[in-house]
Length: 289
Ligand SMILES: Cc1ncc(COP(=O)(O)O)c(C=O)c1O
Image 1: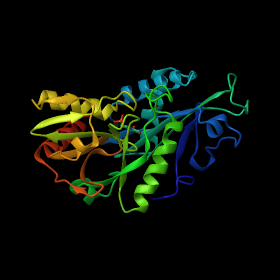
Image 2: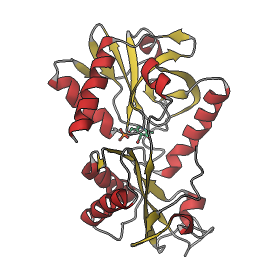
Image 3: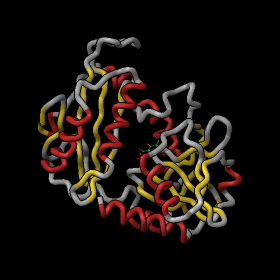
Image 4: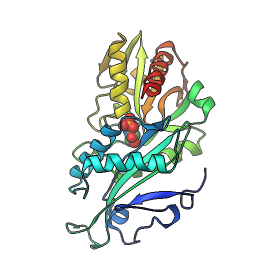
């Protein structure tokens, strides 16, 4: 992967476009030390940002949960997102708007810090390599669990929540897997490190209730697509042993889009017809974007 600290073009930082390699923050930023940082990830298809409004709304919602207010209106952020995609000439890529507390206070309490906002974008194809995106990826069950909703702001897309995701994913990768399956504090299936999970059993679609992890924008889109296409969808608590009896399993997320699962721990799965149908419906939808 090309290094992210020195690329051509611009990043929007605190109200202006600055040269990519000059988009810097102070080392004593609260966001870096205490994770007071929220972010978004959206996809660009054919030069257009998919579900931009939904992503911007979630960025504001996440910052509200973390107790800070962005110094811009949603419509300004939307406009800048569109501008930077054009300026960077992105055709198919990724957009990363984010906000964090600055360096005025270096302590747990940080009520009077400046709120910084930046937006960057880059070309991106599939999250996993193309062969895996088609044939499925391998998940390893993580020893880390999704935190219960009274121990962390689980509905926010907040930097702090990703510490256990990076730890989990590194362990999985070291063992030859692509990603981790994370359970919740009651032992039910939650999600992967950066995507929601669905499975198919007897032609019905199942997904866990999103009460301790992000109710992903792609998850919501896939649920709508399923309903529109008469695929029965059930949100419920799912034990790992039920997941392992599935006919098909897949992940959904902005980065992974819809990615089939070919293996969880030692158990193998095929890429089934409902997964293929949803992939095709999703790709029609983003084409129409
Ligand atoms: C931990 C986690 N869960 C789920 C998702 C899926 O969310 P979305 O479909 O909105 O990208 C993401 C990606 O944003 C994520 O990081």
